[in-house]
Length: 325
Ligand code: FDA
Image 1 (cartoon, rainbow, N blue to C red):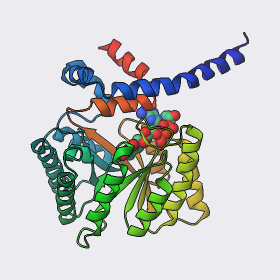
Image 2: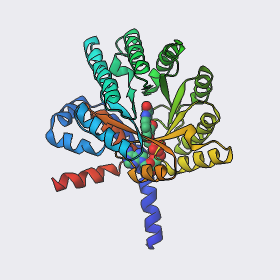
Image 3: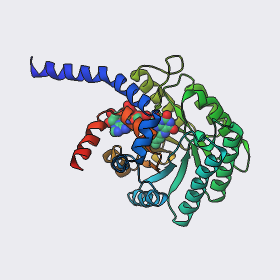
Image 4: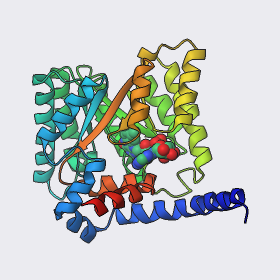
């Protein structure tokens, strides 16, 4: 077989395998026994370092400081999802309160990213709303900002409702924002509503396994919707975040902004810790605002598996590290 054809076949095999691997890693992200095993093993904790800043709050602050020194903003995520009691939700919230105080004390250029399931959403939406409100009050008081991450689609509406109600309090307006996933059909309507409510958006493609009834199954459609929604966000007067490592999405946003005379200071690109550091640095050198999402904590497993789902080639990278141990 000629080398070109071999290469094409290789690529085709890879692209056929991708949806399968994505589904497999997302399924594994829900596996309790594997999660317990990995999160308790020393080697697991070491390997998670590819995407996680460390196990302790102090690790996250240290990494945030170093990212700030490289000219980038930060958002901090204390890892954890779906708590099983109100006490656990309050404990998770306490870590974020400590973070807000530490960010101020250390003069870091950082905000916080919070998952509502970690604040008890699945147990009692009122509990999650009360905790989100407290955190936003604290953020407002310390001149900071709370970003509510978006989880899977059964939680989209309740997450939007909570963020809207918190932002509707005039004393908290602007101190809370949300994430919108370009893979959902509903996202254009949500983006338009959020802009008219004055709520800042982080746009991402979406990291969960969703049914074709609610989300575009084809990557090309997700990408096209991402570009469309990023243009709607760029046109608004609010400061939004475009979260992606996809050079095509980034090039489209840069070129649209340039064409429409939208200054780089009016928006930011956001990327995950440990992913495309080269691109992060390049954007900073070009004069764009970049924010790095820094997760930390012992409950790293579901987050880590979603990162493998996005790019199964990461498994090879991790396997190489394992062989070096
Ligand atoms: P895409 O997946 O098409 O990847 C484009 C290219 O980027 C790849 O070819 C590869 O080079 C690189 N890349 C992407 N992921 C990689 C990885 N894990 N490792 C190495 N390289 C990688 N999702 C969600 O549902 N709710 C949320 O709240 C958030 N929040 C969030 C915050 C921030 C700051 C970011 C950057 C992302 C999220 N996400 C998220 C995740 C998001 O939905 C999406 O799954 C990932 O960003 C991957 O999509 P890309 O846009 O990077 O493109």
